[in-house]
Length: 351
Image (cartoon, rainbow, N blue to C red; front, side):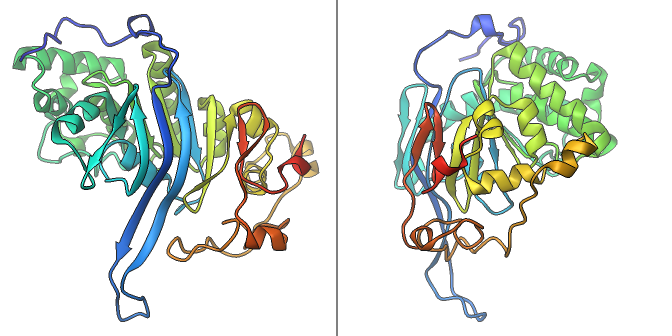
């Protein structure tokens, strides 16, 4: 069935219905990878717990920042939510409909519907674009896969999307190698918007870009989120960018949530030692304030997700850890409404 998309404008906030229920609800999400044995002392049947019990909700039109060190499970979470990876356990409810994995695989029809409403922007814009396809073909590919519109309508849609991300329509005939990194990421954003998704998952979309163009891409995503009423999950290790972009923040460590809440809660009243350590690493532009604020240095490296510590996952590096932390995993509590913390001593860090 052909859908007329050539004359249909990109979705706007007024075109998106307002519902009380969240757009996305995630409960107990797990993604484990089985690793075969090897000659380097690794036992057969080793399981890497990349994501190990993730809970959060996302409202329509909001932007959630997912932060943490490399290896904490941020990107894996994004790929599972986008339907690119099978979840091991847990519940994902999108727009009131629970996603069911049959034998570990979401039904083909359900997966097609999910991918129409959830799109992803990848970290490396060059690797995510087919070098044998023109930019126009890459952007139109999701429309063809979903059987939307005629070739002429798709071409019109491509021109409109290129303009929307700040590129000239005649660039559609060029190949990815002919563009700069910032331009290629704009093309990736245009492709993600092609079929009018409700949720866009951006996996460290600025980390492969020069500093001079990062701000341009970040501002473009902020404008799109506001103008189109999109929900975003912005995966990053850059706390300053997350503070600028996101209204909700989720801090991950070794596959688990350490802290979650509004931007004001997480940045203004951080209750987890790990969150406080991440924030202390963000430079302060005022040299006087920079010299006066606390800098928290974490000892050791991130433990292996194949053999996580007992008790609190952060206990091996936490400067405040006690025997209780090393023996017992903390429950997630709410020091204030909507502010969730997984720490035995969350109250001790009250602002």
